Image (tube, rainbow, N blue to C red):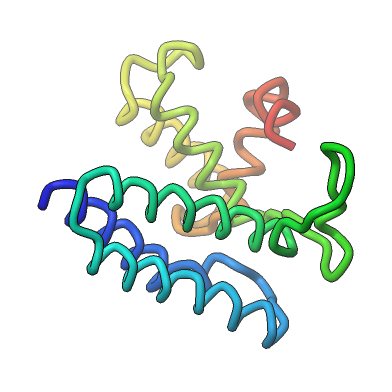
Length: 158
């Protein structure tokens, strides 16, 4: 019951969340991903033994990884495959996403940036935003603050 519950919960989260994380996907690819997630859940629910449950989860995760790269694996000689035959995987990042990444990094490592804790870092940003007449909720302002105050960190994440 433990492994089944763990994997079923994880695949249910994936099924509910995957398309809110993917910017755009063609209908055929979307259906293949949905089908794989549904197939994984049905296999996990009928599997009885621990090894059978683990095998179903592992096989489904591998198929899902390949699908997210662009296509399912295929048989050919050699060890390399081109998963970009049908579509190209591209990662992009908005300023809002970058701001959350930078904020998380600074809050996890406050002393590296000269702050006593994450609250101290937040107060420093708040003071900077006030001086610049920027809103605390203006996510690009956070990026600008990091670029100005911590250029090495900004360059590391850009």
